[in-house]
Image 1 (tube, rainbow over the protein chains, first blue to last red):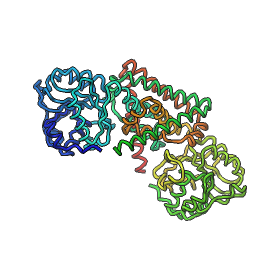
Image 2 (cartoon, chains in turn brown, orange):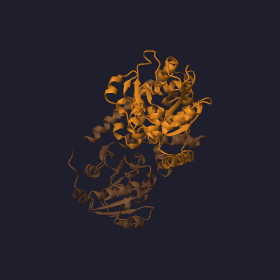
Image 3 (cartoon, chains in turn orange, brown):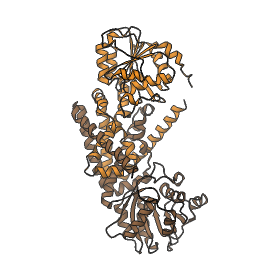
Length: 302
Length: 302
């Protein structure tokens, strides 16, 4: 088990942190730092009123440098805006980041963001990242200092990313009690489509289907825990998912193709009373469910 | 709010209860009766060793009448075996049920069971039922006296079913702290396919898909709560689902058809970057998720 990361280490490494986009993730990042004893300065900027978040103590100050086209002196820039806003920020404000700073993000797709990050016109280091944590809720009012605890936190450096900066980001992630995992941006986008984004689209389709049924009200009255679990993600907002669908459309379409194939197999097997074909799916799913359960145990016993 | 049902009422109405098939549901039914102060006699029979369940106190005795082709004197027969076993029991042992007894079941599809129940060759009353409670676990070792609490408990009488018997069964269901709902067997099978069985097949397909991926081990390492929720049902066993798929194949195939249609829409919209089409699904799913949440509140505030 690795040593816990001290708050003095993180405060010393990043005396000034700026969060760009203070929603659920950005707010939880600030709350998590504070809850673990981080003593540096946290500023924030974005579309929301920062004054409110400063008065509530989540932030120390509003970050005004970027809006004023001045250099930002933060040692760590944490981009937690929607994906396309992150890309636009990197393109239009990247030159205002101070040399030597580390810039990371929390976007759910990585290829386009990493491409934009690699073009920052200063000597700052960009490292794409994706905390596998979140909620169907949005907004800093749902900030949760424990949001990252136990979560897989993917980082997607490129071959030329500075190794010291990667090591620092890993320490920060462990400070949040999350588990850093390194992937390249292409593998990230394919894998996350399968394990996170396709399940979202399925949950959306399933809820929309029952919602459109003439008997929807009675159907919801019959819903048990199974249906509730399967449609929890259906509350997720298009304001978050629009950018994901746009920047990972190829992987999502491929994943849906395979799933449509599986469901068509099942449908044919039902029509033909081909018991063996359906039971094979159940057997494979049982094995996968067991593998998943063991993976969890492994993670928590590390 | 209706009056709570007294244990003396249930004990008086059903002094002897026989459970046929003592697995998770049958065992939980016995445990729920005991936990609420039922003082009558509970017997059980099935493929498992009943001696074990008697020694653990879940049952008072093994029911041997049916095996010996003798009349069973229980006032309530609770059929909690797999669907095809229930049907076979009704066909081959129905004549051994004493006149005046109420026979009900806990099977997840109703048309075929109700058809078999209507042919019992004695003056007992059969009322099909389906508690919307369960678990991906099977076996009496997972018996839970609170399994039915707050659950919707569907009963599917026919037009000729004795009204007094229906009223008694409703009292029993309320005694378990579940909510009785009356549906006809056809509506039941169509609605439960949509709200419970299609979600199961989806969960199975989703888990099988990731399990078959060459990178499955790494993928499971990335799984967050969303994927875990969506694949919890994937641990369900074919031993339970085989009969469901067989006896509700038409409704399941229809429901899968519609879902495949939705997913194909989403896939085309992704390929064509048709943002509007995908956002419509998210909007409809958001509305449905909200409706579902409000339905839950209604249920609990009854």
